[in-house]
Length: 439
Image (tube, rainbow, N blue to C red):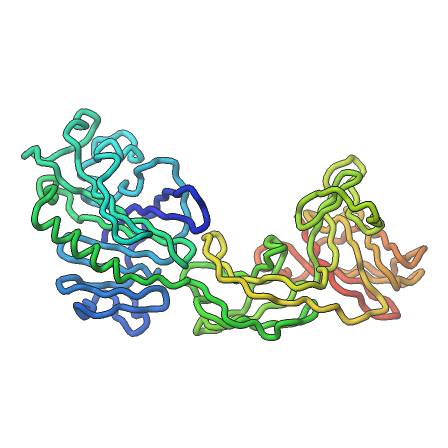
């Protein structure tokens, strides 16, 4: 199956983002539909990502990455409800690949100059309020810039892109023509081409796109740090993506990968116990990653301090109890679910606790680490970072421990990077945990 270029509009942005992505079609059996077999003509096609009526004469095929290809002869209408962004500045790269495009643009020095071989701006056919079709044709006046045209001199159609917005976060709809012979490209305004456009518009008017990831329930709706929580919904087994749970106030907070059910309708994650904050200049405090002026009544005893040379420091602190919005995301794609509220409850009281650890990010073995909290004993304190242990540490004021970071050891809190849980224990008990990250 041919590859093709695509265009997307990111929901919520005012400016259209044009993108280029080539995705091969694979063979798979999904949702009871055999890929490679024709879908019943004139019947409703539906899976967890979209619904659409397929007209007589068109055949539907489904790829492993959930792209729907609707084919009639040499025409291919491709609908990709799950799109990974690959940004581009070229305004016409949506037709930069595919046999018909390559046949016309084979002499171009730069493939991103595809627009040189097409009429711009294209004529448009409105499908509905959120979708339009740009009819792309060769323009004979451009024959001297490396474009190949039919011997007949007739204007021909060689590629067309749809774009739209909807409840999903990002998707693409593209119409392409499969030929390497420019003399066999459909002629502009030919009965055949008018019929194809009529069919495509009719089918797209029946298109209903669904959110790729949807969450319906969080259970329990309130839990303490470290508890296991289940999220219900669908799309959690999105093909080819790593799925993550995100707190809207702390989207970059360290969290281990969730455990996803085989049917993709539920996942479990561990409620984070800490967040990483940064130091700010005097008179400012870090609030959700931004340094803002400190309130007049602010007490700075547990603020993240700057490094001795004035450079930015990173500190670990307990995650504040509050009600947050959480969502499920496909990392690196721009695709995310609807948010639902979740309340982080107060942690259980402990005779030993940590309120601040620094530095806790990009630490090297041998760095001096400071832990602030309560319940530390004069001697006999133990700091555990992953499986590494620093023993018999002292605290002169029962509120501060200073020690040398040991070499990283044990299983990482997050697979692929050296991130661990750090805690303090002594004869009185064990503290809460703070995330600790090594270079």
